[in-house]
Length: 190
Length: 187
Image 1 (tube, each protein chain N blue to C red):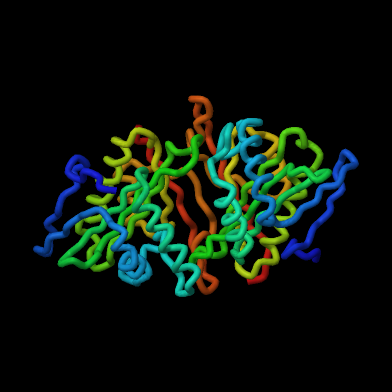
Image 2: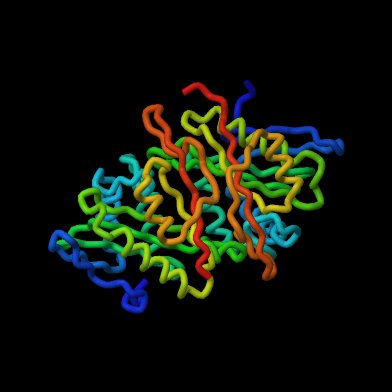
């Protein structure tokens, strides 16, 4: 089986438009680019957990967050670059708590200009591979806005199943939208 | 922090065994004791949010999570005490984020020897009132072990309904139990 991305390793993925996606873990020097990304990506669609302007972290806080994520043996954060520009941030986080340590949560975003060329699918596969090879993770959970059909289709293609709906979970410009909850149970030996 | 508990209808409760349970808001100084309480078999309902493992890292995470919740204006953490000993823990906390901060989650633990004395109900009423009076909170989410019929019934009494199921969410030593997800619309 292909190995999960670890340490400083990079993975190059050919995209449908001929460009190459580079996936790797964040480094502290990425903090500024990540803050710029977060500030921009929330306003590009109604699909994320945050809106225009993102959320306010200082660069120092973002650096500390990167260090925490990279040190956390139950989590993987991945940055995706095309031609050196940051176009995707995704992560999978294990709970680490006793009794629920086999559960994890996945979140992903892609800059709108790079939708439809396979960035999300490549990041999903890398995160799922990490979970596959993790000693404890057996289940991946994610939530998606009802109406975000492209994302739901991608998640279904990856094997995620619908497990419930939270009414009015998102409030976007005063309008409420449901959240579809999905689980992927990994086929693993106990 | 420093919520007006009287306004929420939260007051000491006389128990059927003659003891009195005091209810107060948790403070930063309580965090160590709360971690021990939630890790103890006494409080075990299978779903305490901050139940730590024995390793230093997960203890530190539990400590940070609890301290942040104590400081958070969108949260209410209640302790039920009999003779100064914790016998119940309850936390309601709004989710972060502009698009989702009208959602909140509840976590509840009552010591086994104090089950069926109305303590869970007293905690639930306080938390639901906190949510009703909160300017942003619209929905309460919670998760509960599928094999804890008593707790599921309690949540249903307070109006929660099932919105989903995580298969095999709780597990230890190869035996798994589902997690029922429940919601209550409060505002």
